[in-house]
Amino acid sequence: MNGLHATGSPYAPHTNENLESMLEAVGVETVEELFDIPEEVQYDGEFEINARTERETRQLVRSILQRNDDLTELLGRGHYGYYIPSAVDHLADRSEFLTSYTQYQPEVSQGFLQALFEYQSLLVELTGLGIANCSMYDAATALGEAATLAERVRDSSGHRVLVPDILRDGRRSTLENYVAGTDLTVDLYATDDGNVDLEALERAVDEETVMIYAENPTVRGTIEERLEEIGAVANAADALFVLGTDPIALSLLQKPADIGADVVIGDASVLGLPTSYGMGLGLFATRESYLRQVPGRLVGVSEDATDRRAFTLTLQTREQHIRRERATSNICTNQAWVALRTAMHAAELGPDGMVTLAKRGVTRAESLAEDVDALVGVKAPVHNRRHFREFVAHVDQPAQPIAADLEKHGFAVHVVGEHEIQICVAGVPDAKLDAFLEALEEVLR
Image (cartoon, rainbow, N blue to C red; front, side, top):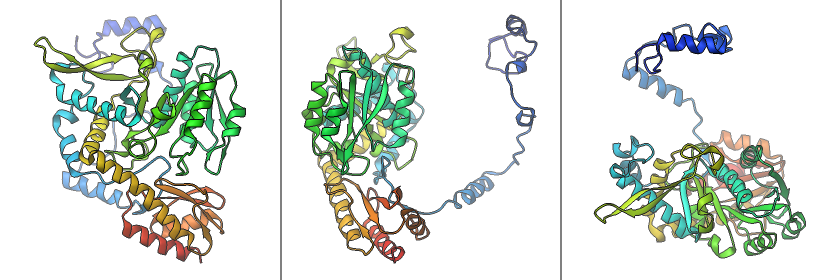
């Protein structure tokens, strides 16, 4: 480091002579000429932020946050909030976890690496697949990575990725962004009554199909009833069968490996994080035969020089560590702290606790649907199927005004059709569900 250069940065190791040589090489006189920043938004040296004491700053932030609506959220559709044991916060907030980045130095990261290994082991046990990692941003990026993996491992030159027509917009948009630089295309297949229309799927599949994606539970809360048959369709077409789900659902529903799934994706942060509508943890598990094609990082077990069990990052097939043309992915993330919280929450619950939590997701959703159906002006659930955590209800009046009136009563629901609202029970106390029924009955009058 040779001190400050002309831009005043103490971190860039360039002398004034270095800077002048680079500017001359690109044909400009100043660094500012390299950027087209409108004058009205250029930094003028003042932030115009008044200095405040700690107490004043806390009061200001509190007053801003108090402007938020205090709503009971019955939203769901991929975002679920469960009670998080206090032990998770207390343990995960220890400095050795909060200040850690990627565990490149295993000799000083054994505790963290072991926790990540346990997280991977949890996903392996739940999915029945041999490989799981902890480096996906969220379910949407995991789905995109599954599509590019399918293109790499399938023998033919096919290019079609089939997804259900009820796939939520955010996941589909991310998937399309992922495949934009490849030969892959994203096509929809039909669903019927909240589940896969198997006959429509069979008609949609051809020799160009490289991947078939389905979800269990679906975005509308239904439990998919024909997973083995969907897997058989994928297998007959030599396409990868990718299943979307989450750890809580996996503790109760069919094990993906048993119904022919090649890859399992989803959001694992249903454990360990509150509802965040953005921050997540992508679940990604697959068969051992695809080990060298897995994106992100894997934590493995080895032995040190004294034959003691040791944990280390064993596979990092992303571009920063190998030649770009050989990389399986350019995903660059460290979701380790979120994975740590997920592992802690799962360990706190234990196998029986996870099953109990999942069963409550079924019984509470179906019980609330019965109570909603008993009200005048609404039918629930719309789909004649078993449900998990959430369900869609048909309202005789337009759905948007119903949702707006419910918001005035302190409850938030999704509008998913002109006369359809979606209701989720995950993380909502029973007393709040009773109050919601009262509010819904009132706004339906």
